[in-house]
Image (cartoon, rainbow, N blue to C red):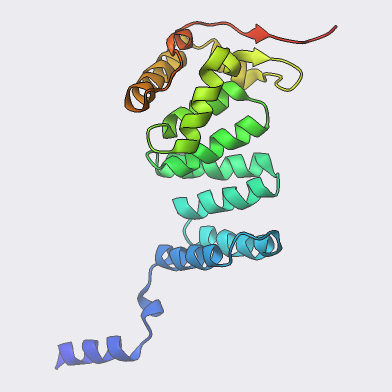
Length: 198
């Protein structure tokens, strides 16, 4: 008799009553995605994704998708925060790393951009293309009129342990996809200054 009552309750009550907050958040993420990618829906998407994160703060897809919207609106610091949070929650998910790489690239922080793209290089063609471009002629090390290296970028270029990790990731990427660029310079600490007039 007891099992019949439970079964009857399950059949009568709607399924969302039994959903966890993270399940509800996933539905909101899907709902936001289904709105499309037009600028006219960005405000509505942000609202849905922020609500999803209020229900489930560690929802990697909500963080990543909110990062995408914020990046498109050119709110780079906020986008970066959400991409970084997504990459902390799911370190092997390449999408957040590509987002991080894109934001740093747009900000002219090419060493940090390269580091992020290398996390996604073996799984994403866009990341591979950017890695190849940045490694060619050591472009990621260049300080010029368009790329003024900040403290975080310079710290990376002079941190031998981080450079060693980048070298390993670049070697993996190169061996898998036959990138036609050298990864040897990743082991060296230097900056290239180009086209700066005093």
